[in-house]
Length: 157
Length: 66
Image (tube, rainbow over all chains, first blue to last red):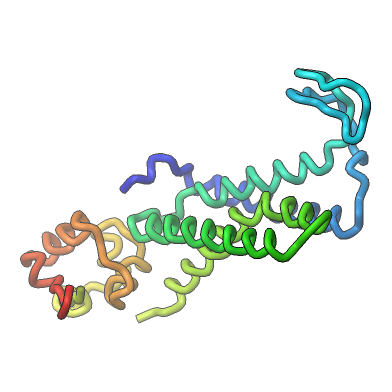
């Protein structure tokens, strides 16, 4: 079937090794208020505007900043994509269907929750919602897909 | 759509795993089809018919208002 965009099965395990530690680190740094400046290096910023600052906007500037949150986000996103886009051990049309059904489900659920959050959550709390919303589509997908897979595994003949 | 894959499988004395290997899918796929939870593609239906040496219609039938 149309699975030419999928990676070999071995990438799935690499995905889990990035995704789970990424999630744990992310939650820890969020709830424990870890300083983003724990790791600070110079980075390339395509468009830089200091937060509440007076210095002019810069294009392609080298700035020095904390990158802990960037590392965490990259781990979750790359890990999540590797999990979502790696083949099963036996990849066939049924697993393709489970995968696409799960993508649709995750997309719909994510937007319903975002819509409710838009209507009922305000100010800085909404900013927190946006941070979580960076990752919820892939998280919802992974949960739904593995739930469907487990379900098809468990109802035996 | 209903099917009699389970019956055909019994006639040929295949387990779900045997059948899965022969047509190149996972055992879960066979299980989902037998439970009417998954309608296979035309390609897969034809592969099953070829393996069981019957017409596709003898394995798969439309139901009521389909």
